[in-house]
Length: 226
Image (cartoon, rainbow, N blue to C red; front, side, top):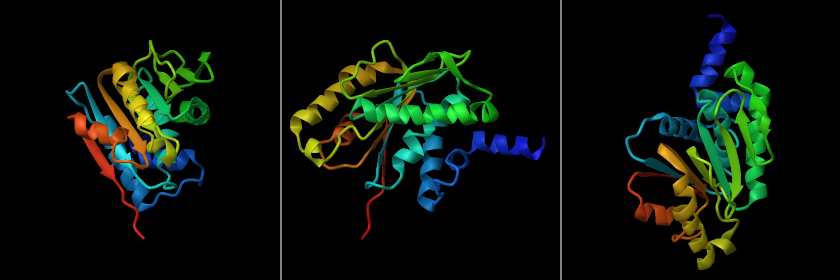
């Protein structure tokens, strides 16, 4: 195995190295980011007998959680598992589509070199892309957007509330939790993984309700120090 092959193997097996590689110097591997990458990698790769497992990632704003996970993990995940599907949910469709577009771009640029995959030209839309000659891919949607007919081996919910004002609205919190119960949870494939990423403005937010109601859940909290 030559040096190039060794490096490609590293990118496939070490998620932090993959994130660093595909961001071309725009992502700095601090101790925090290295820990987050390792924790997330172990979470998504560990097999579970439960119907699904949930990981809540709670960090203050502007700590790179979305760059590290939402706009990068789906491309690595479907690269390693081209027959699996990712659904990503954000507070609105436009925000979610941006994450989907950035993952698609990574597969277009690096997918063939690292994983031997390409984006399907026949099944590539604004909100969704698929992997050529495979059944895997990614769908991006906003809260309230229909995802019927879709299944997810990995569901990422990134900031389901836009700001503190939305977080303080009980009707908005109820709507988001109803979406989880009636839509998102029903889209999960057997033994799937769910990652909820959010800045917590209210104790009765989606994270709080899941922590109260769900059994197979882990809570990764990074408090802000002053």
